Length: 228
Image 1 (spheres, rainbow, N blue to C red):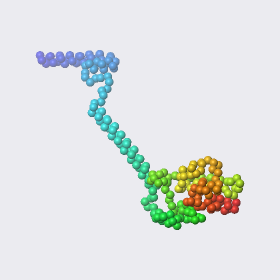
Image 2: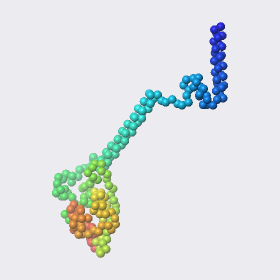
Image 3: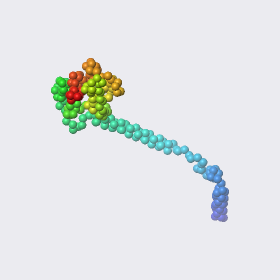
Image 4: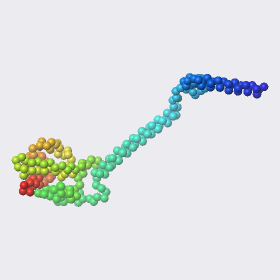
């Protein structure tokens, strides 16, 4: 008797499930979800939000990624500074120059080539006696040498033509050393005269003080030396 009752109960459940399946088969997706949510737990139209544990793990992962990105940025900045400092400093295997051992200007001047009793910096540079730094700061950027000649021809006498060589000046002078404080960066904007130079202006800011004297006429006026 008990066995027959269990069998009838099982058949009733199977029949109910079959009937429900048949009814749901003809329903829309939204209707099926609504019906199933009444009959069974765990069926919902919208996804459940992540649990607190999942959210906590995600926040930890995001924070870890932020820290890694900040550390990588800092390492890149330090590497850039180190590379700049290395390029601005002498190489480890570079031999010290005798000029670097000089304690006074008088000692250094004896080791430098000179013209008209003034240092010939261009010759000293060519011979490797000096190696100018780009700046006092270790990370100061090095300025590329500018190969640009500026020809200045006086209207009164072309014999006194001067060709200013940037190639001879930019190995140790930056653009800001001369422009625009000493010379305006515009053609024919600077009326250069020997009176101004002898007064310590224009070319006289350096020449006659730390570079060869303005009295060395043929150093600038090459036409005089060539008899043109």
